[in-house]
Length: 477
Ligand code: SAH
Image (cartoon, rainbow, N blue to C red):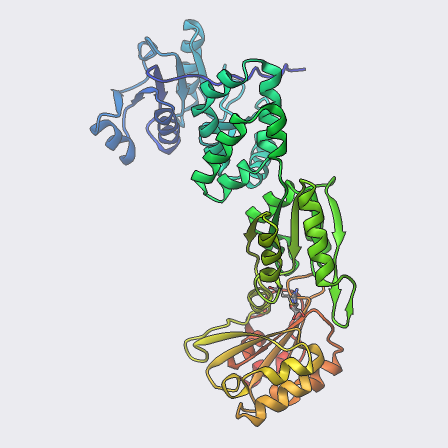
């Protein structure tokens, strides 16, 4: 069995490296080497345009012609990146004879050194190797890590590198230092960097450094991230949401958050469902506030996970006010709101040059809320209405819109469980909205789109089953 490779991060600053080849692969390698500060020599009978520019502008030295073993003179490392196997093998053999490390691109067998798949966050790098035997696996892992590691890690690495002398002077003992780092990284500093609050991050660092080890532990304050989970399809979660979820100690989630999304959450995080269902409020808003405060005060990283976007009919504003009054740090991660997701997954463009120049997000979850809406303006033409929480009041909605002048023939699309495997779309015209919904027994969560654009669901649908009642409409259109 092969032995695992020995990983090395090489300091190439000011050191000669030979690249053989003049095409895009050689170019990629040469540019990566330049970034690491190497002095690049490039050997090839002809160069692609970007390489020729590097040579013309003095960044790269060009060795013209066919490979010559003397090209290796004085090099610390060589990369063979031609599409001619014989040339690549010759470079490898010449390097071997001179004890110069050679990487042959895409040929682990011929290489004495391999270049790993890597994730870069400034000075921080994660390198992955499968020993050359399974590069696709390494690449797969790289993509996974790429999505999990926040960009702000680069800023963190930079800060720690800059402050290294101060940290060493303050905590000369390695054990002390380790405890300091553990506390520092578990505290608010990473989140401050993520929020691009540079000054606050530096203040936080200095305070932590000034405190004793005990005092530093006091700086572990809890925080709350208000995160939008999107409509259900876990693919619609943002990278930021995924990262925050991966760091969470406690997750307070709504019933609307899909099982598939919850599966992506860190396994050992405490999950509490604070679901609210129309007419059946499991947990009151006050209880949710109390739970957030309780866990954040205990120093936990709390994620308040909401369906869709937290600031669209999500009472996110109220929750932040409570946190603010209590001095608890918070951040907000937007999510894809139901109107956008349902429209996309039903093939309904919310605006359209010919039909709608504006979109309105409306909620109509009970009689009282119906009465407070401005029906005059909601009934205007050339706009799209996206109605949240509307399944219960469809008769009232139709009556009022028609009474205020919206045509009874205005198309609608009612999307139940948008973006989820069980998605259903019911289409029709405003006149028979309530009947259609009853006929198909549409249940919550469902989003209603009213406007000319809704008719396009008949032809532009692409996800799940075609709309119910859609074919007739498409033909009529
Ligand atoms: N903050 C959420 C909305 C919460 S209000 C967001 O931005 O999407 C709850 C209402 O959202 C539901 O009654 C329904 O009208 C709508 N909704 C949420 N998810 C949905 C989904 N997957 N499919 C259809 N409607 C959805």
